[in-house]
Image (cartoon, rainbow, N blue to C red; front, side):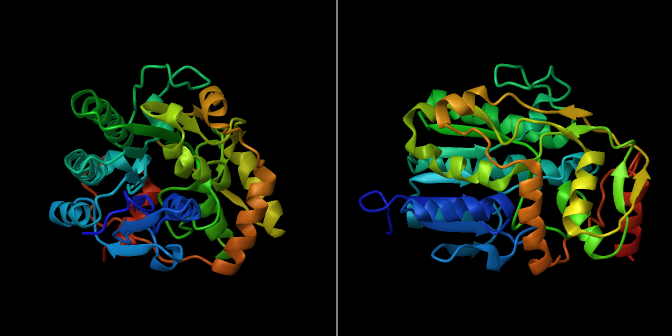
Length: 344
């Protein structure tokens, strides 16, 4: 039996072939962890798994696979980043959302309890707050507006219950609008920066839902992933919830202008009908700055410049288009058109 408890810590990083997960896995390796990545490659890519980590292709929904990995490695730390994070789309794929984002997490929590893992690190979402008072802070009572946020908050509650009953330590992060290298540029449903960059490189207009004056605090990956990775080594972080990312909000219209300027091309914005979403989102980071020294350091223009340089080199890749929408009522026409084209 392999175990990191007597040598280097052994860590499981779910979603480690994806965007945030691949960066967290790299930072864990740099800290001396043995890293096992579990990823079904539905939104990630094998070549993004950092050298030195072992990739296991599979899903967190596979109970037997998850149990077997815990028996083999007896993970010291679990970093659970695997999720289908299309927040607004979750209204229309409710069963898929709960199976993957809630029940998949429960499979991991069960095994972490059974195998006495030292800490369970979970990436939730700022979406748990809903239309809360701004800035969104950890002492607010979450009121998520969509199935994605509901599933994430349910996992948060389950981790708190597992700690009370079994003593499983946890750390919860609520990141928001994270962007940077390794983001899936081919995903048409999420990650607005990736969508905009993909459209520019394909010579197509940038789709903006509504008037584009909705605001987000766009967070560069290097202001997020390192803090998630090292949190297990900070005792005062245990059993805490942290907002993590950027503070300053920008409109989607401003973001589009910044990206167009960074590419140095002429591009136009196409305004689409508004969709159901929280209009203004930005957090308080007082707690993360105080306990984790997680003050954001990369501004939007610099972060976009770095991501554009990477995107030009990496290009875009095809990603899954949902052809099995569960609820089509009020599905935005733009998404409905994608489903019709790819479902034929």
